[in-house]
Image (cartoon, rainbow, N blue to C red; front, side, top):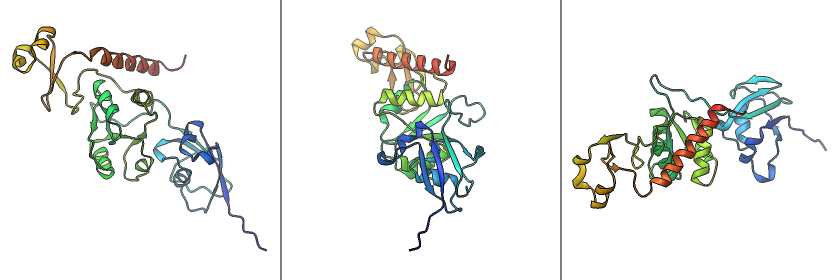
Length: 253
């Protein structure tokens, strides 16, 4: 009986990438069939790792591009995306812009609270998200691995964590963006502008008028803001984010 042995290569994944592999095959070293025509990026994604989550790659110890076609017997190593991860910025732009998928609404509001330009709509489908990310130069944040595999996507990232607190920490740790708390509308992402109390008194409850003097208004939707009953909770979110970002910028000691 003739036994045909398919040519293979070895792919070694960084520990941070093992979460993308099926539980039954969650090993740092994988043997993958190699036909000589598949690109390195295709082979990595065949294991379950979205290409935007793959960092530097080497073949035989030499740096390799995802478009490379490795030969059988090659030893491939795939690192995690370096943190903080650089994002191409336009002239005059000092922080990345983001767009979030429909499942990350709470994260979107917290990012806006921190002053991050964060687009979010709870009714956008995947193709529309990709179009907005590409047209506006936004990083697409998602927990949908299939969405990250779309070839047309300009820049995407998988958000780790089930709780909004953990998700926010992951985004800040990955991108280390410049924060400007209390400058964006958490409802629509518009910029907040100071507004004189006398100008809006007719729109305020009596208790609010007596208790607060500093107000802001969204330049886009007109929503009014002041440090109200939930101020303590929001302050903690801002303080925790500021501390985390400072530790990321300082790096390991």
